[in-house]
Length: 473
Image (tube, rainbow, N blue to C red; front, side, top):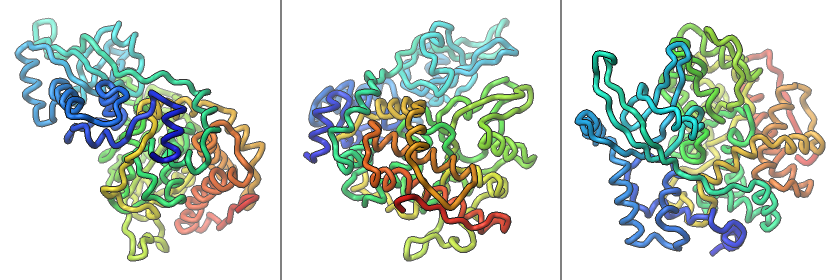
């Protein structure tokens, strides 16, 4: 057992899990986030040091009972049609239509977005109204009648999965028990990656993926070849993240005027647009205008919603081609040339806090998943969500960071936010030597913003070349 594992087990106890359990538990192809899978494992494995055949059998029975495969969708719907009560583990959510005075229940497994539920269930599970909530729900079907022309699925009971007790102050204070290298390996393992297969720089790049979860309205672009696991963190680290691809509409992201329903930007900590090189936007230009307005001020207006504030960060992920030296083939032409037109406007790109060079990360292999101890996924997600609102870290950055080379306000805000997020996750107790503060927090944040500035110069001559440097470059 590695030194960071021994310390993590001693310091964090029951909120630690062997990350390799997820690959041994027998979930098969079930599409559940890692934090949900680890919750299921913990429910049956407890503090066991290995997934035994008995534990695997219990998990298998649970999955078979509550988490059918997607190919069974029509069979489950038919059981509902026959008035059978169904129990499903799913990511339930509820939207509210004030015009019609009604709620709409979403059951992803059944591809249903017009179900319903009771007031007590919503009152007792407020996350249904925001990021959605994983749990075992009891469903039944009300067929069409003279009063109701359409049949409707109802959620009559919900047993949400429980997050382990969170003590943020204890988490922050526990940092003192680890060396910096041990803590970095611990965080990387908690993310689900094997720290043994990544260099120190690559570990920091992996951790940078967490910045939009740690800092309100931190907007990040990651460009990388296929197979580097760009979306893994966002799909599996936190219930407060929404990942979308394909057609992206103003109604989905911002506000659905016909249903008077707020979009993902208002419900999530982070909204991820995956496969951005293939994304289709609207032809009216409304989406680009809304994105620019929101990324600049944190507010937007759409239809009857004149002014809505939100704190979600926007992440754009896209595949790029690389040459034999693992460098982008479009480096000279411009890395954003692969984006569709509505995402390529310089005024939009300039509002991004950083560009993550994903081409410096290796492809995911059989050795990439963590085989060591780390924080349980649900507790790790809650820690990041709670750190997001700790303002003392930004104050620390403002008081201790010295950089030169740019007076642009956007540059300063982006670097301060990036350095603050890295300080939160790498030195949560704020006990850090000056050289490490610059090495692990400030300089990576500068590199991220410098990447955006360099690309803007290639896209528009109005953007002048700058070189941002720190006190300890």
